[in-house]
Image (cartoon, rainbow, N blue to C red):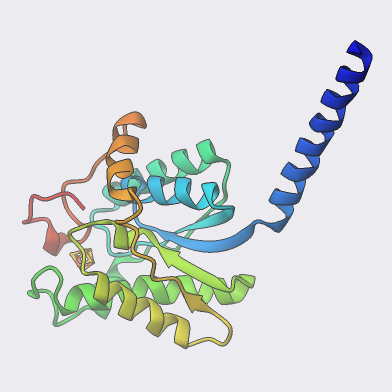
Length: 209
Ligand code: SF4
């Protein structure tokens, strides 16, 4: 009887291994534009729990100064390593970003400067998706309650429409308990939590992104 029980356990153990391998093999991969660790952690956790493997793309030429950019990148990289997922480092050219938003410097937050800023970053993400064969991309920008969801969706769908066979996933990342989880993970991981959105024009604000 004991011998028989042991065989059952062995069979179950093998079954679990096969199921795990199968699950890893069929995991969908998406490209996830990431703006910072606090905005990204709960989304990454949710994706992995739902059998979707994100590849992170840190592409934020809007951030000023360069030291702030490096701190946010380092925090994203730290969390990516912890979750054992890949992170791609995008180019950082803040001067070029400033030229792209010229004339919109005095726009309020959530105004036309922000729409342009989202377009720049999501265009870059769509280009990478196209180069590396991702069918879907998303962004962590939409997790912040300070940002306009409609603007992010508009920019994402516009960027995706420039390519064939690429779609933008405009899921509302503030639902499904993710806003609450965001706060928990922020504390648990002791993330650096920036006090402004990113560009020099948002520095006058004191809210967190
Ligand atoms: S406030 Fe934020 S989203 Fe708007 S332009 Fe500046 S960095 Fe971009």
